[in-house]
Length: 126
Image 1 (cartoon, helix red, strand yellow):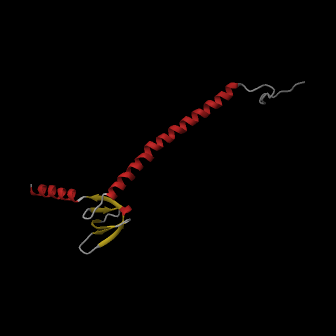
Image 2 (cartoon, helix red, strand yellow):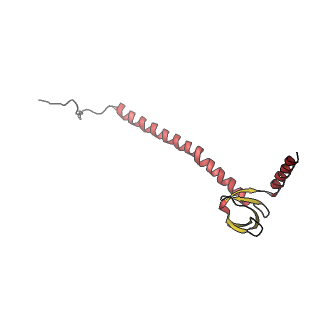
Image 3 (cartoon, one colour):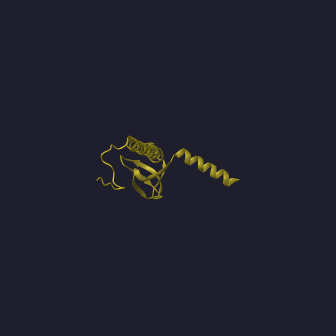
């Protein structure tokens, strides 16, 4: 007498190959989705961050004495000395500050500064 349960698998027969192929298809689908996810992360997060870092590095390297800088803390001053990792700025008549280059938010070149002053004067005269 052979007793079989409805929920128990029959171990005497081989599993159909469609189950194996559906497992492989599911794995491939998951792998493709992961690749798409990493590609999206690269183009939406990593690549723009690298561009910002490159622009910041160029901005820091192009600084020279006489340029006006704005620090990330909001201090505005003129560069009076540039060292390896720091710059010395003059923010008032007698106030000199030494600031790390990483904390420079914006560099305003001398030419740009003079042009903005001229446009402001011409607008105020009108």
